[in-house]
Amino acid sequence: MAFHRPQGEVTNMADQARSGKQGYVQDKGTSSWSDLIRTEDYWAIWLGFVLLAIGLYLFLNRPPEGMDATIDAANAVMEAEAQRAPFKSLAWYDAQGKKATLKSTNEDFAKTIKKWTSKPHGWKSNPVEAFYLDGEGADAKNEAAKPKYEAAKKTTAMRRAEAEAAEAAAGAARFKEEGLNQKAETAIMAWRGAKAAESAAKKKASVKPHSQLGFLAALGIFMAFFFGIGMKAMGFPMLRFVIGFLFVFAIAVLAYVIAGQATMKEFGIGYAAWAILIGLLISNTVGTPRWAMSAVQVEFYIKTGLVLLGAEILFSKILVIGVPGIFVAWVVTPIVLTCTYLFGQKIIKMPSKTLNITLSADMSVCGVSAAIATAGACRAKKEELTLAVGLSLVFTSIMMVVMPAFIKAVGMSEILGGAWMGGTIDATGAVAAAGAFLGEKALYVAATIKMIQNVLIGVIAFCVAVYWCAKVEAVPGQRVGLMEIWYRFPKFVIGFIAASIALSTLYEAIGSDVSAVTIDNGVIKGFTKILRGWFFCLAFVSIGLATNFRALKEHFKGGKPLILYVCGQSFNLLLTLTMAYIMFFKVFPEILEKI
Image 1 (tube, one colour):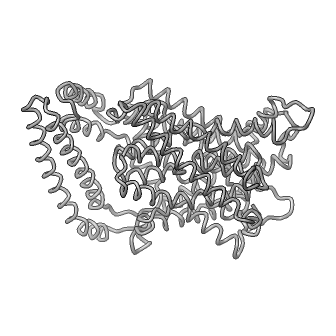
Image 2 (cartoon, rainbow, N blue to C red; image 1 turned 120 degrees about the vertical axis):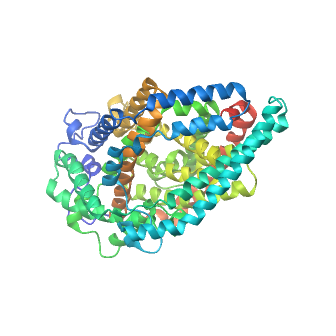
C-alpha cells in the first residue's frame, strides 16, 4: 500500500515488525515477553477477550424470566410429537417457536446495549432517516407497510388451516400412508414459509422512532479510546490516534449509511465495498490527511474482529452437519488452495509468490479473514493484500446474487445449493444472505459449512508459515527452527482458536437450549457480532485510505491476478459442487433427514 505519511513514520505494527522499531524483536527465531504488550497481534487478542468477557458477564447473568420452564415444556412436546408422527408436526413447530421466542437480546438491558452500539438504520429515499426518525415518520412507515402485513397474516392463517387439515388426514390414516404424510409435510412447510413472510412484514410495520447521532458519537469516542489503549502500549501517541480514529469512524458510518439504502440492500452491495470505495476516493484524490494516518490500522481492527469471529464458530453446530459438511469444507479447500497456487506459479507465472498464495487462500478459505492471516504468515506486501481483498469483495458481490438465482433456475436441491454456496462464496454475511434467498434449509447448510471452513483460518496460516520458512525463503544448508515458524505465525490466530474452544466448551456445559438463548441470541448476536461488524468496517475504510492506485498498477500487468482468481474460483465452484453432491446424496443421504 502507498501511505501518505512523512518519511520514517510507522503507521501499523506490521511495519514495526519489518523496521524493528518500538522494541519489536527483529532477530530471527527470537521472541520476547514484551511482545505480549507491545505487538499488534497480542493486543488484538487482549481486546477481543475483554469484549467476550464483558458479553458473557452481561448475558449469562441475566437470562429471560421463566427460561428453564419454557424450554422444558417445549422439549416435552417436541419429544412426544417426534414419537407420534414420522414428520415434524404443527405442534412440534409450535413448541420450537416458543423456544425461539426466548432471546436474551429481547431483554431491556440488551436493547440498551444495541441502542449504543447499533449501526445506522436503513432508509429508502431520505438519508436523514438513517440517524433520525420522529413519531410521525414512524407512523407513516407503519401505515404504508400495514396492508402487506395484514395480507401476510391472512395468508399464514390460510396455510395453517391447510396444514391442519393435511396433518389430520395423515393422522386419521395413523401416518401409514406415505402420500398423505408427504402432503402434510409439504403443507406444513408452506405454512412455515408464510409465517416467515408474515414475520418480515410485521417488522416493517413495527418501525419505532429513533435518534441515533448521539449514540454513534459516543460509540466512536469509546472505540477510539478502546483501541487507543493498545496503540499507546505499542508506542503510539494516544491523542493523535484518537483524533485520526474519529475521522476513520466517520467514514465507516457513511459506508453503513450508503449500504443501508434499500436499493443497495436489494443488490447486495454491503458496507465493505462502500468502506473501501470511499477510502480509495479520498486517498487517490485529495489524499488521506497525515494527521489521520496514525488511525489507519487495517490489521489491528480486523484481527480484533477475527478474535470475536472465533467465538461464533461453535463445534456443536459443526457436528450437526457431520462428515458431509467436513468433506465439503476441509477436503475441497486445501485442494483448491494448493492447485491454485501451483497454477499461478507453473502456468501463468505469477511474479509474486506472496500475492499468489494470498489470493489462493482468499478464494479457497473464507475471503478477507484468510487473506489477512495468510498475508501475515508469508509477509505479503500491503498492496498485495489490498488487491486480494478487492477482488474478493467484487466476486463475492457477484456470486451472492448470481448463485442463488442460478440454483433456483435449474431446480437444484435446496440443501445441495446451500452446501455449494457455503463452500464457495467468501464472506460469511454474503453466504447467509444468499442462503436465505433460497430458503431456511439452504441458509442453515450454507452458514454451517462456511463456519466449518472458517476453522481452517488458523490451520492455513500455520501451514503457510511452515512452507514459507522451509521452502520459499529457505537458505541452503541452514535448518529452519521452530522459533522461526513461531515468529512468522500470525499470533492473533491463537486468540481466534482460543475463543472458539472457550465458547464451544461453555456451549456444551450449559446445554444447547440455554446456550441458544444466552450465547447465540445474547453474547454473540446482541454484543460481539455487532462490534465485529464495526471493526471490519474500520479495517475496510483503512484499506481504502491507505491504498494508492499507482502502487496497485504493477500487480495488474498482464491481468494475471484476475486470471488466477477467475480460474481458481471456477475450479472451486466445480469441485465444491461435485463433492457436495457425492457427500450429501450418494455417501451420506441419511443426513438429509436430520436437516
